[in-house]
Image 1 (cartoon, one colour):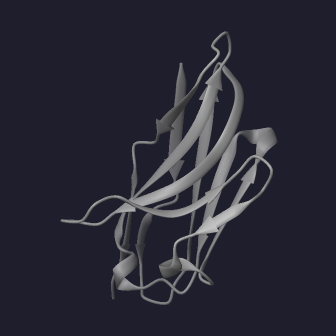
Image 2 (image 1 turned 180 degrees about the horizontal axis):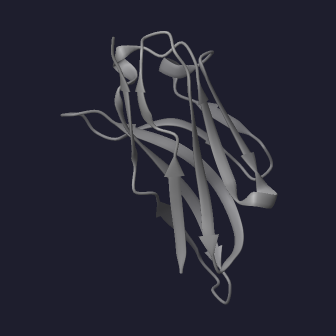
Amino acid sequence: QVQLVESGGGLVQPGGSLRLSCAASGTIFIINDMGWYRQAPGKERELVATITSGGTINYADSVKGRFTISRDNAKNTVYLQMKSLKSEDTAVYYCNAFIRVMGKSYVYAYWGQGTQVTVSS
């Protein structure tokens, strides 16, 4: 009923920039928090940034000052602008959203399929 589709990953040199997008579609009633997580090889998935429906933002310390999360509620889309990328930012990036589907009374956490970001020279 709900899909999160990510785009914008790829290969970039250290110091470069990328912008990730994640669009939610389906029988959506309301979207609460949205966010980005990442998982590097051999490591656990970790929070990158989250944004509430009201615009309150939280960043992991490792990305503060370099990454910017934003959302367009009219488009059910969340973005992650990444600048000054480092090799340690290499990971699969996953979009996350807490969504209440039409006709349901509960909120459920949905995940995107992931998009690879590789920072290498």
